[in-house]
Amino acid sequence: MIDLHTHSTYSDGTLTPEELLREAARLGLSALALTDHDTIDGVAEFMEWGKRCGVVTVPGVEISVDSKLPNNGHMHLLGLFIDPFSTHLKETLRYLLAQRNLRAEKIIHKLNSLNVPVTMEELLAEAGEGAIGRPHVAKILLRRGVVGSLQEAFDVYLARGKPAYIDKETLGEAAALKLIRDAGGLSILAHPHLMRYDTFAEARDKILELKKLGLDGLEAYYSGMPREYTEKLLALAEEEGFVISGGSDFHGLNKDSVRMGSGKDNDLQVPDEVLAGLEERRKARH
Image (cartoon, rainbow, N blue to C red; front, side, top):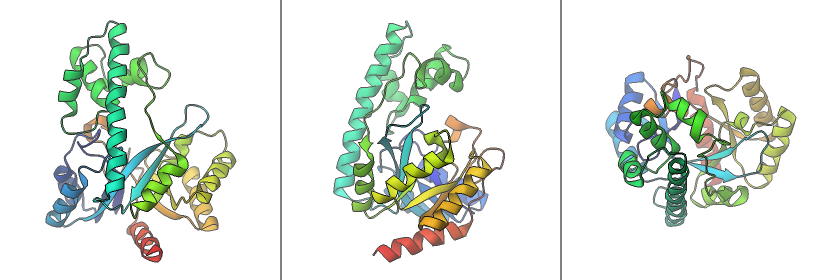
């Protein structure tokens, strides 16, 4: 089995790239992708530790996309097999990282206006080398006793529509797809059900729009995705020639109900054949 959607301490996960790969080896996974949010800073380290741990490594990234979606839905793209040394990719992601820091400052300002004492210094220390994300803010709120759990931090303050939520700057659909392609990667629509369309037919229409812009594939296997949704995605992929991917979206303790390789309540199994299909599409492009 494989897992092609995981996060490390370089974004909002709690395991280092080394720890991710040691855990993958312990679980008997044959391949793992590192797909940190809007950064590839941990990929070189990840690739090196893959050799030591005997796990096939897939260099990746998860990019947030500016797309107008219903019901507070959101769109993320995975870039798999990206070139971790791509200058343009690095520069673009560093710009987005700078915007994340500005967003963090605005979140702190909102929290302070609600009489919740959080400082930028605390947040930077919490994030360490990683890109600042809302889970880092949530950890501070939990530690301070403002909330009783990480989920409560989102439910009360940090989720979309809550008083300390701030949108982050993102790339448009075409720009994000081009960025991945120019870096030699395959573009995969992450967790398609989280676009939150009312019907699959509407989601299908959006996916076909993305295909015209260069979308390569669909994350049809995903922890928490309804089985019938997976089946519809697999049928659409067969019909339209999309490549298939899958992963747990593992974040370590920041999403402690989701396990690497097996998802939540063992609802995930991504077969090795998925990686073979991705490799075949990658080779066909070159």
